[in-house]
Amino acid sequence: EAGVTQFPSHSVIEKGQTVTLRCDPISGHDNLYWYRRVMGKEIKFLLHFVKESKQDESGMPNNRFLAERTGGTYSTLKVQPAELEDSGVYFCASSHSGTVFGYTFGSGTRLTVV
Amino acid sequence: GENVEQHPSTLSVQEGDSAVIKCTYSDSASNYFPWYKQELGKRPQLIIDIRSNVGEKKDQRIAVTLNKTAKHFSLHITETQPEDSAVYFCAASKWNNDMRFGAGTRLTVKP
Image (cartoon, rainbow over all chains, first blue to last red; front, side):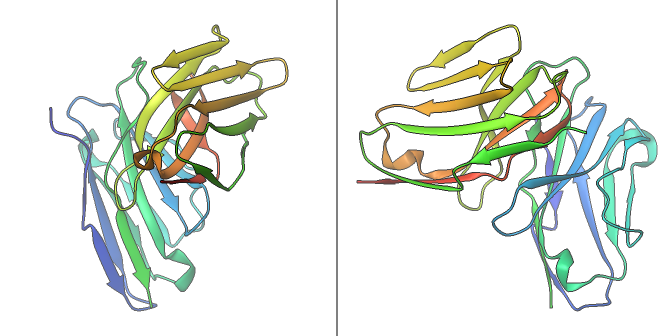
């Protein structure tokens, strides 16, 4: 089966610009998560979708971040306007409701804001 | 919400030695504790997990232990090899939902 795919793999943007990250979960996975890892720190939870609904968005840092999952398939995470502290690796993960095998992660998008 | 702490942040061992990474969690309702290994430039990969109804689980050179009373769990790697070098993350969740991760441990195995 295809894994979780994310693109772009890398993005370098200037402060104040907008960037949209995309995640395609494993087909049939209802749960989709966004995480962020800043250099040397933990993989920090951002939000959780169940199908197209936001189950938990308590980890979203501020209103410059907007996540969507229209139709309950792929998800996008938009940062607008980007700030320097938004730099990091953004991971997406998906899981099937009731799975016992943990999450499957995408390869991540490395975002650098300069 | 759940808070996971992980120690040490870096660990260097000689090839063949054992490595132990420890994590604590705060939510007593958490019942699923996976460990992920992230090699440089790659995605985190699940390497082993344990559920709250089990105290220990082993898979070849890797073992995890769980102490529910103390709310801590540990990863043990025996006979370490250079390819074990990576960042290891512990995590805790309730029924595989809303997983929270530790800060990671960078393990270096010196040949």
